[in-house]
Length: 500
Image 1 (cartoon, rainbow, N blue to C red):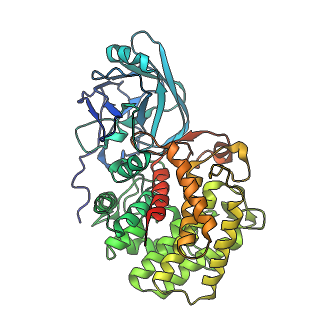
Image 2 (cartoon, rainbow, N blue to C red; image 1 turned 90 degrees about the vertical axis):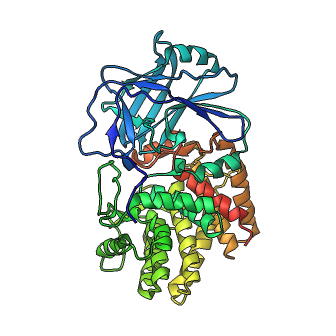
């Protein structure tokens, strides 16, 4: 396959004029995409690359303001949000104010603490201000942060509507339907690695069971990563091109899907070679710290490759990644997200860390069962460990069926990614016969509560930010949107709705 035939060359827009549009599903919500953007001339950061050849506009850290014009705004009394979407990674705390462009009246501000490409940020604005917004536009200016911010701009190409600068107007909508439709679109695309993999894992489950639209979007997303010559083409977590290479063990979750559709693609062998090159003397595969992520982003795709190749040695290595991590990352009091040579190093009972642990274990066991790689005694050992870990995290589920950012610390507040991921693991555990009906009901309760966090166009809100600000950022209640949250909820939806 030749990569990205549907993608234009990279370009950075400044002061570009673009068409305005309103769009929505049959529900009554509306999306008003920006009409014109006037932005200052600033240099795009050296070495970075906007993913997929999309274009971006800047909001300057110093100097002139950026103005968004919405000439097709409509009057409404409904809740309204202003949304912009990061085009590159942000490695600092930025505060960007939105004001009426002529009067300077404050509309609101974006509190952005780190970011990854494709991550939407939105603020609620007063619907009473829409008439004036139509006349004046919205000016964006920094009040905190040292580096310019770059956001996706409409450029006439294939940038998904949900990721464009827009006014999103509330209305009647079915959250479950909105979530599935958004998942089955390129709005759900996310950077290569664990984030994209969470989405593609959901799409794969849907595709395997006959959802043609999910399969179409899945293949479009996978083909954005794959290249016949280089094997793999993507940007690392700093949005720096890393074509033909890998960054860490967190890169490999998409290969669960890739090996299903393209088992002979050169990227698959490249992935195996990279994994095995980072195997130590006891069989642990890691780059840097040993983490729970490896249960999901390493053991699970390694099992998928083992099945595709009917390779018992890779199956054994997959299982070994689970058993070794169990020894390093758990005790009777906690599941730790990371460990070094001397044992656990923090993130005790971090909700999302426990997701990677339980979801990775149960999905790896599921694949190894499918491939009839269950002879090793470690297999039964991990079945028992999954049951133990599920019972451990279940005690922290709250009365609404949700979990906190740190499971045993309610002050860290609800995290929708921890809740969706753990509930999905419970659903899988029940379906595979590891857990009883009590856990199935816990998963259903979580799903019901999570639907209240869906935006009109189908994104899952109220998730703790990606882990780039240390434990403090995970514990302080800061909440955002990200596609991988949508992917975890999609996985939960699939396992609950699957009648097989």
